[in-house]
Image (cartoon, rainbow, N blue to C red; front, side, top):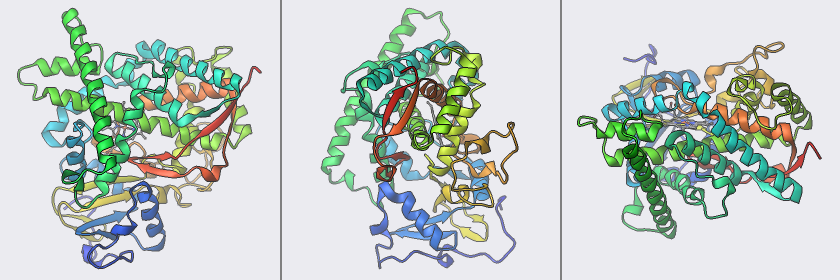
Length: 474
Ligand code: HEM
């Protein structure tokens, strides 16, 4: 029995309501991977939840109750796991690291990652972060002076890759100041491919390669070479200074790998390098992008951001000191509120390792379970004026708290033992970028809002975010 056990008569999966489908293939034709979250959300608006989706031979139980989601996420890794096919798809790509590892293999990787991303490392990292943020400022100043439209989805992914590499691998690739041939172009193919493959009821690509699968193979070859070179340089640095403690996650993993009973292989090290590159890139970049989507439409909020940034860092253009980051709550609230309405993670997926009872439903072991995160974040019983972009609701210590405000329904970083270990890093990046942006520029979208689509590519990304910037200093 588990925490979610009910005392009422149980239903089975077969008793759950289902969206209309076809014989044999069920709802297969409705499952369009880039729109998966919207398709499921539309069914959740029509049907009582939980409901059952059939994709050919696969049953997927879809829930929306955030309390149940919290319970399940906290009962990992013993009672639930990430879906088995996620591990399979990532393993084939050489990316079976801490995100997809399970049980005994997951624990040592998680420990290393937690150490590397701990908040205590950020004081010494601040000068590097400041330098990368200044680079982004210069790039945007040049674009503003030239009257160019900035495609933010490109710039912000460059920023997050530069930051992740500098903090986690001890090398700053400076892609912000490079031309078009950057590693991000190759990484960009990976997330949509993961999304497509985990949504397929059978792994066709193991038998037939379509042009997009061949394009993915080429991108993966470039990315693996990049990862291999990063590791080789970290090994050289360690060999040159054997007396030194590991300086970053990569060196920490290599030190661990060298221990006779570490349980880590060279492939594990490479898989985690790739995992962190991917995990730290799109999530943070597109959280920022969705924030710009709302900010661009609200000049008063931009002016407030300008005043907040000026108050914290005076005449400086970029947050000058690590100590000041904690005074930038307003900027993180802008992003948190943006992802309540435009969740980067609209779906959390798990599989139970044993038969479980969820609410009044008996769910057999290994059933695919999906939790939709947005319906409860748009529920007036949990968040006041749920359709309104209202960052102040997250600033509980300023003014009158906006009620109701049920933070347990906001699981953008997951929950429980596998909660995102990068959330502090993401918070620092968000504070840095948004405070720099609003301190120095005003912004407006260069297209009509209605042209920006939601695209599910493992993270939920905007189809584009073209922005015109104007310098505050004229
Ligand atoms: C706004 C930005 C981010 C969001 C919204 C986000 C969201 C998430 C979510 C929802 C999970 C799954 C949690 C769960 O299963 O309970 C996760 C896991 C993970 N994230 Fe993040 N993430 C972000 C940034 C980052 C960054 C910057 C890094 C590191 C560079 C990172 C590294 C990871 C890793 C390694 C895992 C796997 C943890 C495990 O399975 O033990 N994330 N993230």
